[in-house]
Length: 186
Ligand SMILES: C[S@@+](CC[C@H](N)C(=O)[O-])C[C@H]1O[C@@H](n2cnc3c(N)ncnc32)[C@H](O)[C@@H]1O
Image (cartoon, rainbow, N blue to C red; front, side, top):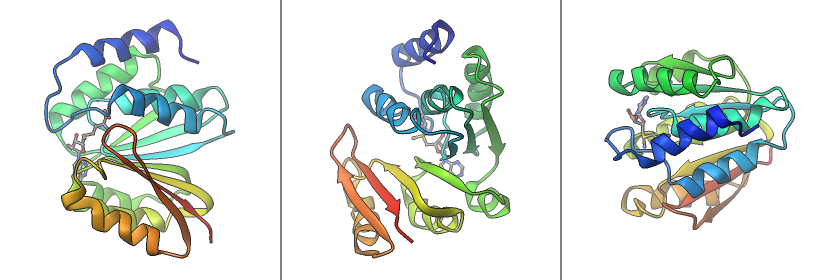
């Protein structure tokens, strides 16, 4: 699952200086995402905010073994070019697909159901993007949103709204920048 191609691209990206806007998740968060998806059969993942592919590679390496796929959304051209190069170099081009454009537009056009959503786009859009993604989730699906502690000034309201929603079970996990995990109950 974590073969040499995957490991060498991840290690290279971990050595690179983070370049906005595609700043990757922290390495432990990448490992956490891998651990969430790897045990699931045919796991369909939606990633909103793909950056240069670091989190995509963790997710795609995780789902590949049991037949899953990752659909990643990204709007920045420089990130898109790097994403394609990095994902291909990791040998995951058949497991992860990129949809180019603003996720507030592209997500509405996607007619799929997802098991796991990873939300890591511009914080100001989290609420709008969650609402769009929510329509594509069935009971048991999981939404993971990054940055909720680091950017609590912008995202405390996101966590509070998820935790107040009785159709979800939601908690904040204090790993790295803070992850809000929300499981769909109904
Ligand atoms: C924090 S970075 C993502 C890092 C990536 N998840 C990783 O760990 O490698 C956020 C990304 O979201 C993208 N983004 C922000 N708002 C977006 C939107 N509305 N639609 C699509 N992409 C967006 C940015 O261009 C940026 O690359």
